[in-house]
Amino acid sequence: MIRILVADDEPDVVEVIGLGLNLNSPDWEVLSAEDGPTALDSFRRHKPDLLILDMHMPGMSGLEVCKQVRSESSEIPIIFLTVRDEEIEKVRGLEAGADDYITKPFSPLELTARIRALLRRTQRARVPTRPQGFVYQDLAIDYSSRSVSLNNENIRLTAIEYNLLYLLASNAGQVLPHSFLLTKVWGPEYRNDFDYLKVHVRHLREKLNDDAQNPRFIFTERSKGYRFAGVPEL
Image (cartoon, one colour):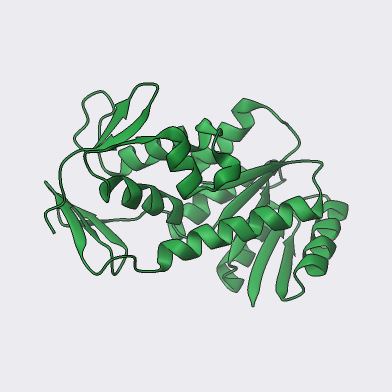
């Protein structure tokens, strides 16, 4: 049973989303919240598998809820709802820790497709891909447990951040094009959404204490893509 929490201060929107998801995926359980504090409380009590957050809600904005959830859970997928189809809104949501966004109005089929794609990506990240790991300088990745440590301290990554790091590290020394990374991590429909990649690479660098101007791990190949330094030692 997949449990999805929908948080929006417009009851009609929540109802439409709930009906659409139940129609297209009757095995999903849909929970609802009408404001930020209720959404956060429901997240803590019900432990949903995915969050759908309106960007602007009373009591606590979707951005604030997202940041709080990310401080407590790095793996739960989060989708933002926004009425603004503007670049800054999309970037703000991604910067807060969201995995995807969808602009109102949208069709239930489109939302269902995005949810399924996001669940597939996060579930793939939980499946061990190799029995060994990767070590470079003070960074260590254990592929079997999907854990990452820097200087022997555990680093909490979201599922997408881990997917991105895994792809870069497992191809250390090679330049991976933007479109390749977007296709592999997000899916072919995202191959031209460079903001997704830019924001998550920045988040990854911050967590790895990697300076973009003087990198140790992730190098930017201008107009081409990204390259991870070094060669795996394990």
